[in-house]
Length: 552
Image (cartoon, rainbow, N blue to C red; front, side):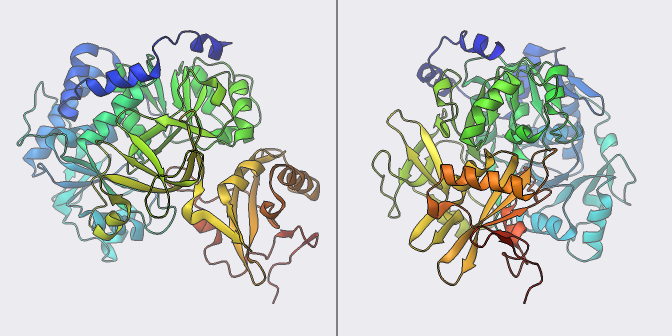
């Protein structure tokens, strides 16, 4: 099998790989990485936006970025300028980002699907001075301006692919003159800001993480080399305003490979992309297990697929179905890559482990007082190392809550085994208190996700006058499954087999799909927002009945 062939080729131990990565100097900045990659890869294909057909070579990218950077400086964008970028997955997005990086300006990625209120939040919090937008997203931006939520002069707007407001700028005009060289108006170093990258916003308003040039060039290097393998064909299937395609692009630059970029994520097309483009590295959405099998599922050349939070009972089956090495990894917007499971540790498949610390990262588990806990005990994960975020922009209170003495407090509960591997138990704020017992929603979700017919699960607490809270599970079923009592009975049996009795959900509700964050995570707070009675419409395991909606 292909995945077994890959494992047989691993020769350099991870400890040595880590030492080498940390010992080698980082490029001085994003511009230096671009120059080095273009000098070596030249006519090689850097990216292929395969839905639109946009392609570019390394040399072509460098000249395009140089020319765009020069024109951006000419219209007034300099080092430290805050530039909102609200674009779909088109080549103009990475070209703009890299050009801003060469200048030393700061990108504020904005989800094109945002409402006027959400656009205003990002632009106001991050102090946007300019905006790069697309003809397709102008309407919402104009609405935010008309409603007085955004106050940006027309001359500070750059438009891709459409009508330009009076005094504004056409992106195509700014990018029309490639250049062999570019001299930044001021020196750009590791600690200069490159992004104010907003968190997914799974709870409350998103916060703007201040991410430096060091953050990005180290994240790209770590992902490129920590496996000790060559990845020439890499897939980016999620939106560029999210962090993953950005580090995947930098990873590609280090590898001198080609990045294949989808216009949007698609679970139905995903395995077809792997086969069609000969992908060697990807981020595998484990929810693919809910899709009906396709004949080409195992027809790929993937060396490594990163997965995140895959239920233990599904992990080995995913590897088998797609014939690839799927390995867990753990990271956050605030700290970039933090842990990964090395390719050479197939024994950790299905263990639930997030792996060991990445290069440039230290991890520890602490109690409520901030003291390290004994091995095997549960506590909060803290991470430190060069290149983590500098703080939350314009939010010193939130920064002080999570950054102390160089350690970032993740809000995640972890444990560590005797082998040094870390295991996530759940979110501190996602614990359900039933009577005198604490229940980690993540643990319940992991068990139910592996139950027959289940594709995805979200578990929440339901207020209860007797026990404080009861457990409720929202269930999305696999394709072709009917949401009936027979399926539900099988799910309950699986829950009872895999969980202590007090952890087995009392309430169950079927959903067609879940609300999502920009990174495609389940936006759990949105499921329950505005719902007066979380029991209404659910099946009550205790009574064996469905509870009617709209009851008094």
